[in-house]
Amino acid sequence: MIHPFDRAIALTALDTDHFSGATSPDYANMVGPFGGITAATLLQAALLHPARLGDPVALTVNFAGPIADGPFIVQARGVRTNRSTQHWMIELVQGEQVGATATAVFAVRRSTWSAQDADPPPQMPPADSLPRFSPALRITWAKRYDMRFAEGEVPSTFDGAEQPHARSRLWVRDEPPRPLDFASLTAICDSFFPRIFIKRRSAAPIGTVSLTLYFHADAAALAAQGAAPVIGTARATRYHNGYFDQSAEIWTGNGLCLANSHQLVYYRE
Amino acid sequence: MIHPFDRAIALTALDTDHFSGATSPDYANMVGPFGGITAATLLQAALLHPARLGDPVALTVNFAGPIADGPFIVQARGVRTNRSTQHWMIELVQGEQVGATATAVFAVRRSTWSAQDADPPPQMPPADSLPRFSPALRITWAKRYDMRFAEGEVPSTFDGAEQPHARSRLWVRDEPPRPLDFASLTAICDSFFPRIFIKRRSAAPIGTVSLTLYFHADAAALAAQGAAPVIGTARATRYHNGYFDQSAEIWTGNGLCLANSHQLVYYRE
Image (cartoon, rainbow over the protein chains, first blue to last red):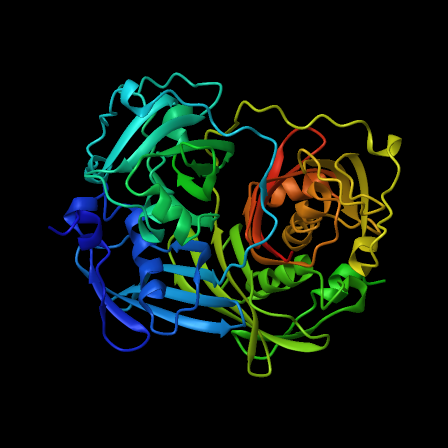
């Protein structure tokens, strides 16, 4: 049994730098694929590349235009390899059109002094004590996640009542459960609904234009996490003339930050 | 009189996509140039490009390796232009080596519903009431900024006393004063000292590997700001095995967020 996530990010090597793949109906968005699955697929090309060094520490994906349902080519080009870091430029192409671009930094980590800053990790009731979220929006990809909100659920009716803030706090995991890895963590980092849905209680037309992730999790931390749910927190700073930012963090139940996620989102109206 | 910032980011067009430039001693870092000036120079290539559409809304710069003092070539390639957005891939090359890569999203903004989220803008005493910061570190670029800290100044002696957090709050402007534009805002977004200097009170060897900016300021907001100082806030989430994240925000004195800045920083020890 192949997990739908693995089916969705599957790539076939065409030559050293080029891979073929295809969108998956399991992760369909309102139009085209869920951005998180596209981001995971672009990262996957570098993860699969024979010249890969170490593990990802930073990833930025720019969504250049709509991705059509169907096949695509991903090119992953290592632009510089140092002793312990490696820099990638990645493009997803359909026909003559660039659908998405990405840059990634990979690194071999060494053991160093480590710490978290003073803001306490998010406090959450047990996942089992919260109901599973069922999105009112008809978006297939959301069914591939088990989400349990403690705060800032997407409203079931969009009544347009502007809220003081758009913060969310939830448990989230792949559905069905799947051991966490860099690709699935990437997709989870984009599974936070657009903050404007919560702030305005309105389903404004939106589209992420740029997504950036920083990985604090190394392979050992991912292995320790397994298929258990992670805690996600999300918030926004400013919505201005068509674009807003949102930032999210992914935490273990034990209070370790696994990743930061930032994005800039286009909106209309 | 050309401002040192304009001298530092000056580019000469070689053909449509290629520009030549050189590092400036005015913005020297401990080794090579200040990352903020490199980021501003990469953005400048897209700003100067004859095919440019609109203004920058998102920028990511990856610092691939040390940049040597001296000349460089910047290539800015428009990978996709839509009706109101434009996607760029940019590279800085010295000889055969890629020194930095960037992606940028430009957009033509339309007037829409706009708002800020509930976290109040940073509260600051007047800039004039705070002393100008004088860095103990011998870094030339810091002299090109007038910084006045209300919280989280870089310590004058590195005594290794670990702090509970690494938050900073300061007024900052170009020195000498210069009207704010997209390039100078980019550099200011990278003018926050590495959080580990404040957290550990130790001058660990560091280097930013990836920097992402989201611009909320449009050309009108920049014109309104002029050469007045902006408020900067910065903080970190986690320092783990050689890499930490830091996030910063740039605000006007009137409480409008002009930009978000995020970065992942390598550290040793």
